[in-house]
Length: 340
Length: 202
Image 1 (cartoon, helix red, strand yellow):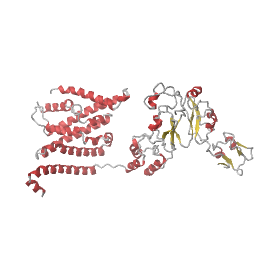
Image 2 (tube, helix red, strand yellow):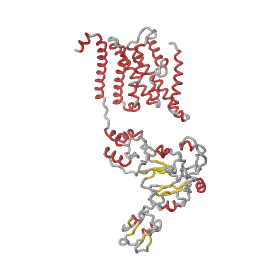
Image 3 (cartoon, one colour):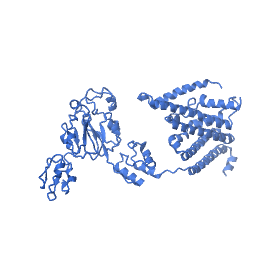
Image 4 (cartoon, chains in turn blue, yellow):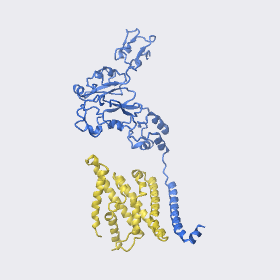
C-alpha cells in the first residue's frame, strides 16, 4: 500500500524514500545492538549497586577511595574493610554488613575537635590587621599569620568551608563550634586547617587539650589571647592515673587508647588548657556497706585518695574528692562499688 | 606515482600535515580529557584508530550503495552519525566484555567517541577527498586507510600530549598554571609546531 503511493506520487517519493532508508538503517543497527547487548552482556554484582545506595553519597574520600562508588566496588571485589566510611557511621556499617553477609566490626565514632581556645574576635592577640584573601591558608603565609601565636587559630574559617555537613558554626565571639551531632568525623576540616589544629578524637572520650602551642611556657602565655595555653608543665602527665598523657615539645598529648575519661587532668591544669566536656556530670562512687570486706584495694587504686578506711573495716568515699573515674569499680573483689 | 607512494602521501597528510587535532581542530575533547595518563591515552588512541577505521569502511559503503544511488546525499550527516553511534556502542560492549581494564581506564570517554567530531569528520572528508592527482576520488581501500592513518595521527598527538603533561605534573609550576591552563598552552604550542608541516609539498 505504502509502496504504491510512493511509486505513484512523486512528491511523496522525495520524502518517503529517505525516511524509509534512514528508518531501515536505524532499525538494522538497533537490532544489531540488541543482539550484541545479549551476547556481550557483563555481569555486574548487584551488591555493588546496593552498597552505593546505602553509602551517604557525599564522595568525601574519607575511605581513601575515589568516591562512594569506588569504595562500594572495592568492598565487593577487593575485600576492602567495611568500616571505612566515617560519615556513614555505625548505621552504614551495619547495612553494608547485611548486604555482604558479614559481621559488623564496631568502630568508635570519631568527631573533630579544635585544639585551640583562641581565634575569636575578643580572645586573640593580633600581630597585624590582615586584609587579604579571606582564607587561613593565605593568611598563614603572610609574616607567619596575623595572630601573635604562630600555632593558634587565625579565625578565617577554612575548616567551616571544608565541612560538607554544616557541622561547624560560628558563635557571637567569632569562635568555631563543632556540632557533635552533625560531625561525621570525615576529616575534611583536619586537612583544611593550615595549622593542623583539628584532630579526630573518639566521641566517648570527652577530655582534650585546647592548645597546640609548642612554644616554651612563658612564650606561649605571652602570645595566647585566651589565657589558656598549654605551657608544657607536665602536671597533667604526672597526675594521670593511667599515664595516658605525654609532654612533647612543650605540649601535652592525650593517648586515647589509654585515657579512661576521668577528667582529672582538666582539674589539675594550672592554665585550664584541658577541656572536660563531662565536668559536673560524672557519677560518684559509692560503697555498699554490706558487701565491703575492707580489703583496701579500692583505696590503693584511687588516684585522688578519695577512699579511706582501715583494713577489714568499712571503707568510705569522700564525695567531694571523688572525680568519678570509675577506676575502683572493676578492682573491688566483692563488686561492692557502684557509680551513682 | 605508484600506489605505495600514494599511501605515503596519504599517511603523511593524515598524521602530520592535516592532523585531525592540531590542524583541523577536531576531537579536542578527548585530546584534553584523556591526555593525563599515558596508559589511558594509548588506550583511547587505540579505540579511536579502531573506530575511525571501521567507521570509514562502513560509511563508505553506506555512502556509495545507499546515499548516492537514492540521491539522498543531503542526509549524509544523519546517516553517518547513526552509523558511527551504533558502531561505538557496539565497540563499547565488546571492550567491556573482553577488556575490562581498558574499559575502566577509558571511563566516560568511550561513549564520548559516539559524538566525536573527529570520527564523523573522517567519514565526511573521505567522501569528498581526492588522491594526490586531484582527480581520482577515494575508493574503499583509500577510505579505510585514510581512516586508519587519521586515527594514528590522533593517537600520535594524544600520546605526545600525555607524555608532556605527565612531565608537567613533576614540574615546579605556579599553582594557577597547573592542570588545564598549562595543558591548553602546550596544545597551542603543539598546534603551532604542526602548522610548520603545512608548507610541505609531497
